[in-house]
Length: 82
Length: 374
Image (cartoon, rainbow over all chains, first blue to last red; front, top):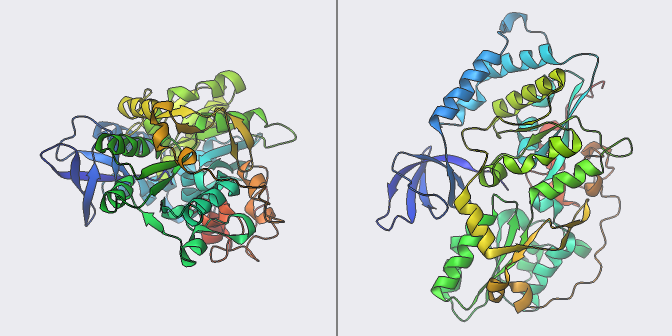
């Protein structure tokens, strides 16, 4: 029930209340009532038709970098079964 | 898709699995509770449990709002639709949840009640606007993630003067449930070494409200995203805290969670809702200050006040282990109904209905796993 999906804002209506969002090949409308200063191109977490938060690109890249750093290199041919 | 595919990368997953195997000390146990059903689902769907060494175990928490809703509340909703003849709008997750005497919203709908599945609270408002002569009730359910959209709906209904719209409020709060789980943990209950904390709930409330977990219970928390690499990295972070003797709230899901959370959403919730003195959770019992009702200045939108309903005692299905599974004390495979009389097609308990329920996750992804020697 708490699932929320990252989607990109492609357009914002003149009132600033709703946005058009793209999610892979799907587009739909989403309310902006819960966030401030949304802009076209932003990625937001969408939950039951509402943008809950913006997704931080910098933080996402940092997280991926930490994952690469923490990961122990694995040679697929020698990987023992877990 | 951006922010999804890269957090499901196979090579990174292999590296993290190897790092977890290297970090987990063989002389101790790592019993980690993933609070959310979303985590449970990821752990099974992506086979994460099978990548863990035997001493790193996931214990499934109560973070599935549909699963913890007492059956009597579903009966109450059915009574709104059948006795008060309202149009009841609900998220799809609730439609098949068993109520008392094998009732469900879906069966009530089939019998003629006006029950509609909606995607968003905006749909419920639209239905109310389109037919001002019908009373429309929104069956609100969910943790702090799903509460702000209900608050927006209440404000819109107020602003538009929609007289035929009201809310049957079943919103519940995460920290009190976590508190109960930890307060009842121990040799006789569930034993926990660490907590994988909620992702999207925390996106709204922030990471700060979990400070009591390390302080009061000496248990480390890592706020974890829902993608498989998020769960694995968070697991590694918990193992490291435990190995190093640290005990704090760490945030793995930094791309969507800050310490303070979404202040705008919090302010909206505070305006529209007040804490209930107590609320029943399936499996956990009556928990103080663990749920929300409409605040007094929104009482006119409270369906429980507008349409009084009396519900007697509702009996649990005999043999259903959902309550113990929700406390983390039992696993779905410990239930003798699991996979025999209880399946997603014919669910006996709520944990088999919701896609986030532990039983549904075991059924969909885990029932052919070979037994492991723990």
